[in-house]
Every structure is written in C-alpha cells, then in structure tokens.
Length: 356
Image (cartoon, rainbow, N blue to C red; front, side, top):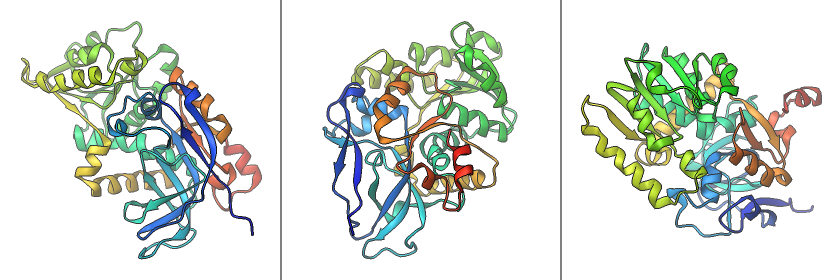
C-alpha cells in the first residue's frame, strides 16, 4: 500500500504572502505521549499574518523554514506509546500556534480536546483561537456582568463577532465599531453599529463604557481608553493597526507596555493586556474547560461561527492576501479534504450545501 502523501504550508522567509509555499513533507510518526491526526480543518488567522511578518512575540525566536497553522481539528489515525483515553478515529482539537496547516501532524495527547460527533470540523476549528479568546476576554479577563455597557473595536473581525455573540448571551448591552459596510452584520449579532471611519466612539455614550475590547489599537488605544467611564476597563488583545502600518515589533511592544502606566490615571480607569497563550500557560484547565463549553454550544446550535470559505492548499497564499486586505466577515479554513471535514455521515448534497 502506498504511504499517504503529506503536504504542509511552509514559510520560507518572513514578509509577504510570496514567502509561503506548499511542499511535500515526510509523514510524521507519533512519539510516546503523542497521537498523529489526519487534519480535517485548520484556520487561517490574522495572527498568521502577524507571524509571517515576524511581529508575533511568541514566535519571534523561530526562523524559517517553518510550518504555519495556529489551530487544528483532526482525526486520530495513530497512537503513540503510553497514550490512554483515546482511540483511532477520535476527533480532537488543539491550539498549536505553528504546524497545523498540513495534511497530517502529531499532537501531544495531554493537550487534546475532544470534538463532539457530527459537528462541522471547519466550524469547530473557527472556535479554537477566536472564540476561546472572546470567551476568556469576557469571562476570565473582564469578568463582564449582565447589563454592562460594552464597546467592541473591530467588531466585524473573527474575535469581534465572537465577542458580540457571546456578549449577547451574557446579557451585555453592546456596541460594535467597524467600517460602515459591516453595520448589518453587527446588528444581526445584537449590537449597535458604530462606523469607526466617521463616528467618534468617545461621543457615542457620553457616560462612558464599562468595558472596551480592542484588538485593533488605532491611535495606540487612546480613543478606546478615552471612551471608558470612570473605573472602566480596557482589554487589549491585538494590534492589527500597527501591523498594517508596518511598525516594528519593539515599537508595538513599547506601546503596549505603556498601558500598564495608565492604571493610575484620574477616574480609576484600568487597562489589561490579554494573551491566550499566556492565559493557557498559567491556567491550562481553563483553556480546556472554555473550549469544551464552546464545542457544546456549537453541537447544540446555540452558536454558529461564520466560515467565509473552505480553501485548498493551493489557495493559501491568496487567502493570506485576503486576510491582510481585511473586509472578510468570516473565517478562511484550510480543509485538506473538505467533505471529510463536514462529518463522516455527510452525503454529497449536504456537503455541497455547507461548503461555502
């Protein structure tokens, strides 16, 4: 029998999408404590753009060539020695930061989260980084309470949409700032849209917001901070504006460090920088609990992440260009075998209807 062919998305140099290539790679073998999975879905994240441009602190010490892929949903096809509690055919997920834009990869068994039977693997993958980030921002970092008034900057992005959907479930009063063309989406998610190109968020709510979530960082977060009420909390989780402006990482990190100095300003306003990797390192059980909770909500239909398109290996470089350009209202997800990602019992008619 011919050995399966492995393919990976490799970054051969830092910079633009032209630094990406799809290459054949050796089929990995599960070592002790590991499983090998056939990859069903692996999201393309804006964070991948940040990594590709060498602006991501967690990967700054890596050097090309390296394989991209921040998250993975896969089906176990090999068990390493000492692995218990899993069997061949189990569907599992993990947040890997690198290495999952591949046809096969190995994973540590002690980090795996089970994926409920019957869910769309692409939708499950869309939850791992973006929706877990949103859930933890709401419930772990901000500890948001029903009735609070909350502003989401970048509300049309993947994390922004998740913040609105989960915030509505938590009983928050929500506003979402994004380009005006996304206003209908933001309304559907239960928030009041703000056109960030025309409207001044500091004047939308004169009394100020209880919490502002900002993954954009325009004007170095000053406008978000100004929009808070006395005693309010700014939660920073990204800096896409700085990436688009081609700032250098030391400059970005210096501005984020200044957030800590804002804690003593008049009015008792506070700032908190959130990192999903730091949170997972400090509280690994939280990551598993939170993602399992999200998978349960997905399985029951309580949430439905938007998948803009399922792409093949050959479309990855173009997908990175689309990510960097912005304007997407859903995730781009790499599916080495799109029909397998939809579920084992999915007939062709259903598969065609759900691949979008």
